[in-house]
Image 1 (spheres, rainbow, N blue to C red):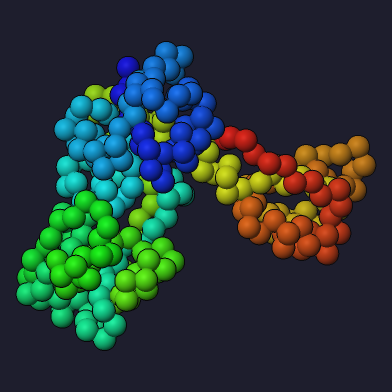
Image 2 (cartoon, rainbow, N blue to C red):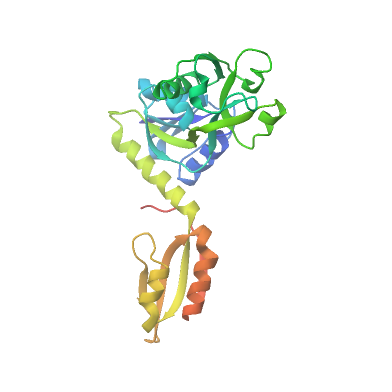
Length: 281
């Protein structure tokens, strides 16, 4: 049976559970549940701290899991990213008092406070910068005010918390993170991991695409299909009236209105948009 780790709390937890549910898996009903067995799909889910998941996967305690890319890279556990999941986006950056530090090179010989010491140490080493990395488990933004560090490295979303502490980001982002599906290289459950991956790809695709059905004059179908190429190619079916054809294609959700307008201008009619609950590619 495949052993899969899921965030038990935090910003990734609810979205990860919702995605697994959409993928057809049984999920926990009570936040206190730590282990859920889905016998129908031969998967055992372990609800663990997001920061620990990459360690468990890398050590082989579990075969695969969902965590943040930042946590995966910080762990240095040997687990590998299989695919991005499209939620939990964040940007990881350095910050300091305005005007004090302009770029990463200027961090040399300074103290850097962070909750991600592995990730930061690796980034500094790649930049050829020697600095003292100070590990903190939380409230990193106050480290400079309290005199613990000269620079911080942390997740930056709106920047409101940084500004409240009189700080501002500098330099290029260290990392753009999001939730990822990870696996243990060489796991004997490789086939089962691939099944989960395909299902998750189906959910991600369904969230980003809609199904578009429309009737098109036969002489314009080639031009219409260029507007709606689908993931591989659209489905074109004959209608009782030979002058018209029925077309079905998946289109990016964000482009739906623009595509519908273009089809209407071409002469297509009866344009119908349908939500996709899940798909298999």
